[in-house]
Image 1 (cartoon, rainbow, N blue to C red):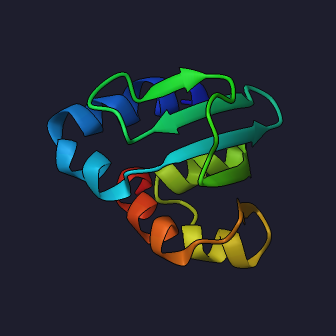
Image 2: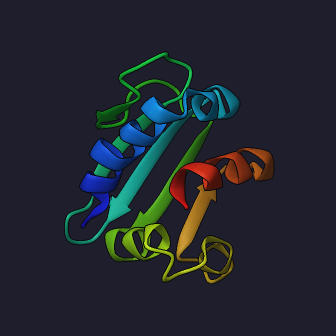
Length: 108
């Protein structure tokens, strides 16, 4: 598993089964994943479908920077997202605590 699998397969599948989560997030978020298997993705929860695209498109409400390795660990519940943020492994810019909490429902 890597960030591409999570962002392009798992998150869209979750949003298809729980569209209310997308409505709750209701924002554009850029994911900047570093390291091996990294890349940039856009999660657009303002749309009704096709939420994830490759590359940075649109104006994000928040940009998340994380390594591929740590992103996978967070998704597999081997690394607590709150701890990762406090250790500087998971960065939010700008830091929007409300939006970060809504995103936690998607990522955990």
